[in-house]
Image 1 (spheres, rainbow, N blue to C red):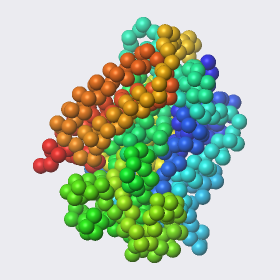
Image 2: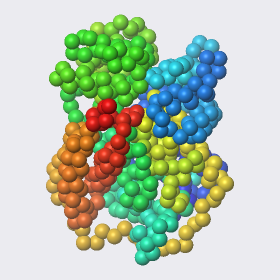
Image 3: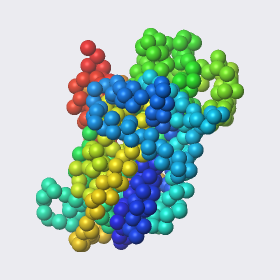
Image 4: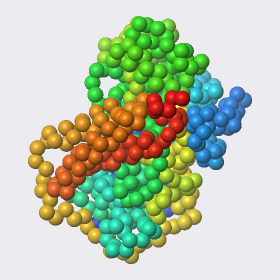
Length: 518
């Protein structure tokens, strides 16, 4: 058993920001960060576009950013949260800069501001087209300077520990006491007992297979919270990024940043027609849900596999300057952006719902907090405004920190049992788990994708139930490994998406059900 003061599950922007602040404020307390891949692997690392915040007070204002966020959220944002995040955001970004994060500036040293879909002003700060990677680099460098932070890479959090693991008391007033964690190198499962636990575990794009998310994004934090009876909300609101590079394969897709459309690229169908103006007067700068549905419609009408992003009319030297990573990745796929159109499709990109938290990041489970993509703060409502996610992660990490400064969690005296897998055996054969995972991903793409209907959702629910019982049989019989744990989590997350999709009876933001067109 490891005992720690603060357990943080996840090493992206949200988790590391919280770790750094706690470690600096409480140098004699222990902070433990668990992450299932290497310490830098997270959704943060893959964020290209940037961070939206109000820095140009001549042209922009907090009120304009607030209104843009509320419009994108389609009436389901929590206005108090929106105002808080947007007003605190610039402070958090300046703080990040003092920690060593570099953002693009002009010849006068002023921040270069970009514009993305749904934004009325230029307000997105960036580091070329690898903003997330730069933020992750700066945070890891800061983390490594603090002796009371222990980073545990290649450790997989399996379950949150609550009274259900050691008490016959069926009280509803549950608390979190840490987590059971799998050391992926040794295969051992051990207990981390914590005074306070924070989920910062990122997204769930791998539930769909076609995704801009890294392979680690399997919804683990949300699934753990669900099994611990924590409130989960808005899982139906999944943002599909309109323009993921299409290479004919399933799996993680390279993201062609929305900033490329902000730069002036056109979307064209297989006949070469620029089609977005048929769907929205803003054209390519419409919000992501509208652009994704338009592409989905064009693909279905034409029978094509993809549509195309046309950058051939743009200044290619400026393009290479602003999007070097995208330019080089396309070249590796034999796509010369100066003369070739880029094939793109929508791919699962961002979850607007998740573990419900209040303004301080507290969940419905005592001593459990959540921040970043796994949380549902009320900022995004039915659809996230582009580049608001890293902003939310930084602000909510600070909110949790500020709460914990004032409210020291008490150390429990309860005896926490070790993980018990007595009677289980090693899972022999490597084919069954990828096969089951593939079935789940196909099911979600086919029945719960960009455009849904109730008949498909009910069919998905029936098929998922069969898959659940198959997975549960594997779980009960075999010792846990990473693949089985991830499948278990993805099945839980898929169930939440399907059921909450069925419960919503109107189209809002990123949720579109054909049965409610009228």
